[in-house]
Length: 322
Image (tube, rainbow, N blue to C red; front, side, top):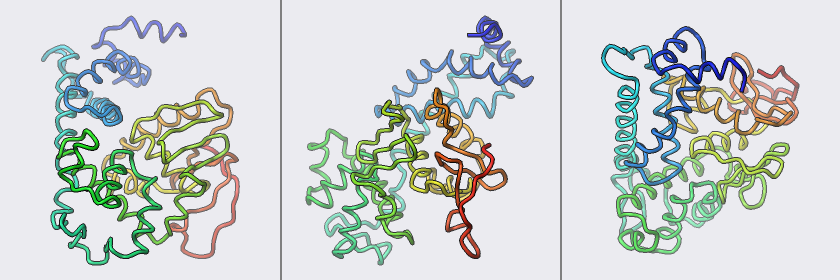
C-alpha cells in the first residue's frame, strides 16, 4: 500500500466524502472497503441467495456514489446515511424479486402449461421443446431447475418447493423469470446454437473460459468469483465475442432496460468486471470503442455486431483499446 493510500485510510468518513467530492476517486474506494461488510450484513437480512446479495451490495454503493453530494454531516454521521441506503435498496430489491415477471405472465395457465398471452409461444410444439432444452444451460441454476421440473418432468408447481427447498413464491418467481429469458432466446433472430459455441454451454475468449452450465469463470485455469450480474454481463460479451456492442444493447440484454437512463449502472459493473478478469494478467480483454460501445477480444480485433451493420459486413480490424 502506497503512502497516499495509507494516509487516506486514516481519514474519517466525513473527510473521505469531502476528498471524493473534490475529485479523489480513491477516497470512495476506501469508503467501499470500510462499509462493504456492513452492506453484506444488511442485505442478508432481506435476501438469502448469495448471488442476489452481491448484486444488492453493488447497487447500494452505486446509489451512494450517485447521491453522495446529498450527505450533510450536520444531519448525522455517515454511517446513518449509509444504513438508510442499505436498508432501502435491500427492501426494494426484495420487493422486485417478489413481483418481477408476474404481471407479464399473468395469463399463464398452469393446468395446460401453455402461455396464452403470446399465441406464438407454444410449448407443445416439438421444435420449441427442442430449443427450450438446448437453451436451458444458459439460465441461472435456480430458474433452470424449476423449469426442468415443471416443464420437462411435469411436476406441479405446488410440489416444486418440496423438491427444491424454495418457497412457493420463490419457485414461481424463478419459473416466470426463467420463461421470460427462454422466450427472449427462442424468439431471437439468431438460432440458439449460436449462443452455445462449445459443448456444455462453455464460452472461451483467449485464456478466459465461462461455463453456462455451472455458472463459473476461470482465466488461465484460475477461478474468478463473480456476482450474478457480473456473470450475466460477461456472458453477454462472450456470446458476442470479437463484436462491438453498444451501451444500449448491453443495458437491454443484461438489465432489460430500453434506455440509458442509469448510465452509471453499466460503468460501475464494467469497472468491477474488468478488475476481476484482468487483474494480474498482461492481456486486456474488454476494450472500449470510443463513441460506439465495447467488445471482448484477446487480440484487440473486432467486427461490428450484425445488428449495427447497415450495409456490407465490416472487415475485422485492430482498434485502439480504451
